[in-house]
Amino acid sequence: MTWQHTPYTIPLLTGALITFLAAYFSWRRQKTLSGIALSLLLLSLAVWAAGYALQLAGADEATKVFGRNIKNLGVVPVATLWLVTVLQYTGYRRWLTPKVIAILAIEPITGYIISQTNNWHHFFERSSELVYNGTIFLRVVNYGWWFWFNTIYSYILFIASTILLIHTFLRAQRLYRRQILTLLAFSLIPWAGNAFYVSKLVLNWGKTPIPDVTPFLFVIGGLVVFWGTMRYQLMDIVPIARDTIINNMRNGVMVLDTRGHIIDLNPIAETIIGFHEQDMVGQRATIYLPLWTELVQALERGFETQGEQVMVIDGDTRYFEWRVSPIFEQGNVLIGWVVVFRDTTRQKQSQAALQLSNEQLRTEIIRREQLINELDAFSHTVAHDLKNPLSIIIGYVDVLLLELSEMGASESQVAHAQKIDQTARKMGHIIDELLLMATIRQEDVSLVPVDTAQLVSQAQRRLTTLITQRQATIILPDEWHVALGYAPWVEEIWENLLSNAIKYGGTPPVITLSSTLENGYVWFWVSDNGRGLSPDVCETIFDEHHQQKTRTGHGLGLSIVRRIAEKHGGRVRAKNKPAPESGCMFGFSLPAVPQKTETQPAEVT
Image 1 (cartoon, rainbow, N blue to C red):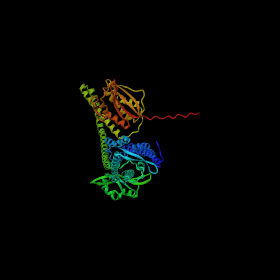
Image 2 (image 1 turned 180 degrees about the vertical axis):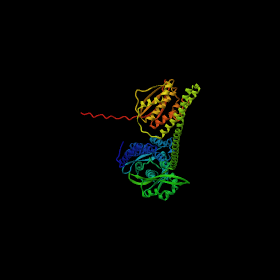
Image 3 (image 1 turned 60 degrees about the horizontal axis):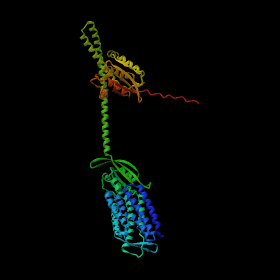
Image 4 (image 1 turned 135 degrees about the vertical axis):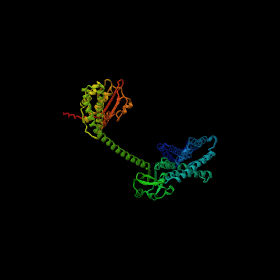
């Protein structure tokens, strides 16, 4: 290979290196199809410039052909890659199906193969000679039909790309026109240089051959596009992306310049403001916002703020939240304002409905509380009014039983009198429970540590007759956990749970009492050896006035247990004993006595 010194080699190789680095950084920065196409375009331009530098530096035919082959590797795909890039940018990416891309790749691949096999058919070059132009030796070529076909094909793609860019420029908002101008500069200037060079080949004007200026201009244009990707985020936010994102937003968006003139807005903003885009763009925003007093003041004063507005649109009352935000360029240079409108009508309606529902609920709660208080007062009054005559009845029955015994009455007469006595005493117990329930609901008490063993013992004494009749066995724990409570009420819990276990336990009843500590609460358990309960009954047995076939009663005992436990901040629970044992476990929880932290004396050394 023979080389010659030229003034073009270093600029072309430098441009090729810079363009190659631009292609690399573009590849690293963008992984979209448009970004990849742009990276491949820059790479092709780098190969074109490097190959042409070698071609110009060659001083003989073989060296120049070597450089031409490298150059053509970059030349043939440029027009196709440029079209793919423009289609991506202008929003026609749906056209770039795998089939279309494969068709577009046919011409560049075929062209390169033909250029490399030119010695066999001379479709690309018919002949060539070296001519000295006074500075360097240039290779003057008589091109074949494929070269001209490739040139016409490339110009068709270039014209199509330019039309797409101009069309996009005319319909794009002002914010995006600088991007499109950058792309047009890349295409028009290099292609104008190429048209200048091709016209010399066609018209054969001038006797002195000149180098092809196209790669010089394309390298410069490629670097301009790369600068545009850094400066204007080319291929990141493009006009079609704006149409896809802004136009399809559920919120209204209006963009203003620093003078307060409208430069962009989406359909939602048009509907809210009530005017069309073509009427508003270029006009002051305040002209079209006469009813938006606070928003107009914010725009006139030029500061970031937000507010609310009520509007009547098509006869419907609508609520909107709006926010004014500045748009900065290069960190702190104000270039405009963006106003975002958000329709909050449904939210306001939901809030109003929720507020109305809450008011109705509060009213219902107050009404129910009043009803409960009235019922408590009524039950308290009725219980007191019934208790006195009932005590008289029990007293007369006691006298009657004594007289029947002295008179030697029949067994049936005595049984009837005893039945009256039992029923009256049961009624008295129910009245006592009604009074207790009314008292629990109305009174607040202080919680102190209670002596569980003593309370259980007192409850047992109250149930002495029942324990004796049923021959019940009660098994107590060796030690009780200490809980907080109000002793008279806690004793009522024990009395009700023990009575329940004795009545509905086994024959004879065997009852086991225990306590456990769980998450700051003491759980007290009463276990019997009865038949057990179904899971559904376990969930509802503490409900007020619960009735069941296997455990009948007036339904107040366990509900009293629940009410007292909840008044203490505790809970109640019913469950069956684990297999193979049979029977039920009824439990209630009370707050545990807080543990005192003992301070260890410091060690003296």
